[in-house]
Image 1 (cartoon, rainbow, N blue to C red):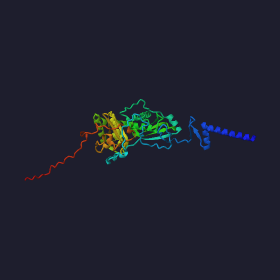
Image 2 (cartoon, rainbow, N blue to C red):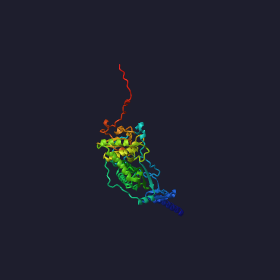
Image 3 (cartoon, rainbow, N blue to C red):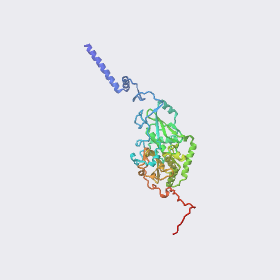
Image 4 (spheres, rainbow, N blue to C red):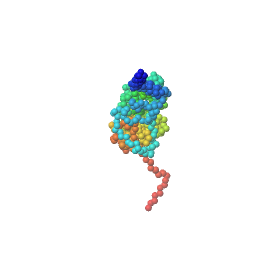
Amino acid sequence: MNIFWKIIKILAAILALILICMGLYTFVPSFKDGLDSLITGKKVTTDDDGVSPSTSEPEAEHMEPYSIPMTNNEEPEENFDVTYVEPVIPREYLSSDIDTGYIVPPEEEIFIPDELKLRIGGLESITPDIKKLTDEKAKELEDELTYGDVGDGLEFDPLMYPYYQMLDDQSKHLYRQIFANARALNDHFKAVETNVTGTQLNNAFVAVFNDHPELFYLDTKFSAGYRKNGNCLEIREYYNSLADNIGATSAQFEEAAQSVKNAAPTSPEEYEKAVHDSLAEMNEYSLGTPYNQSAYSALAAGSTVCAGYSRAFQYVMQLAGIPCYYCSGYAGESHAWNIICLDDEFYNVDVTWDDTDPGHNYDWYNKTDADYATTHMRKGLSVYLPPCGGTKYADVNEEQQEPVEEEPEEEPPQDRIYLIQVY
């Protein structure tokens, strides 16, 4: 009988121990983690707050390819491909006041005439290079970098700088910092906004590039370093070799732009036409031209591609206070052109396609979106530029057209003898 009760007591103790363990496993995370690691053989660590366990990993290299966090709620994925060309069209990280009036034509309906196929494909899109920083490198950069010029107090006229107006507040803050540091030639600085997605950072850089053709030395790429928690720490801008002697190249750039401006009439519509004609006559289309993504190539080098034509046209218009935008998209391949505002009406202008080498025409001058619907399709942030439906300056008058030189009639030689037969 005594043996029976001893067995009962042992079983009761075992049952009580099991119940206690179940309670600890359910309600005490550290007990659960320890038991899991004992069973699986994996070492488990917790975050600083002791709440979110994660499997430990060996320390990474100094920097490694990193997933751009596309939203603030997504966890970074180690093997995400970060190479994308344009900001995505969805409006999640843009201002609520963006213009959605442009109707995007179907890409499959875009048709490029044969004579223009040699004038496409020269546009380079902005390319981001995003890296993940090790804890050690992040600490080093935190101590080493400053914010540079954050652009506090900068304001941008909505009619002159539309890409800035498209952005949300965080992206606008980054825009001001990127612009101010580019103007000061600071190439490496701490991000003034840290809790930002890759889309926001890319949108801010593209907006600066598209709004400011005077930054002719700014390259078409940027890089950024993100902490392991997904926060942006550093931004690096890149400059072409024109920045090496910025005093001389800026003087040359401004002199060329002012020369085009000063030779043009003062009325906006006549000024536009004169600048259009000057740029067409000054340049030849060439994919091999240095700095051909900048206004410098079209104004100071005499050879460029669509990006150079468009940025130069934009800049000389800006000098006269005429709203003119850089517009990028698809025209058989990547292509750029302009949108201009005259008397509160908007028009498309493609100086690249109007330059016939030699001479020029007005086939793509002051056209509506309907006129461009089968040849040009906006992409990226450019879809939020104002729709073009202007009519007042849509046609170039006959007297404005470039005169066509007629071949002179051949005069008879002076020494020829004519026989006249008299009947």
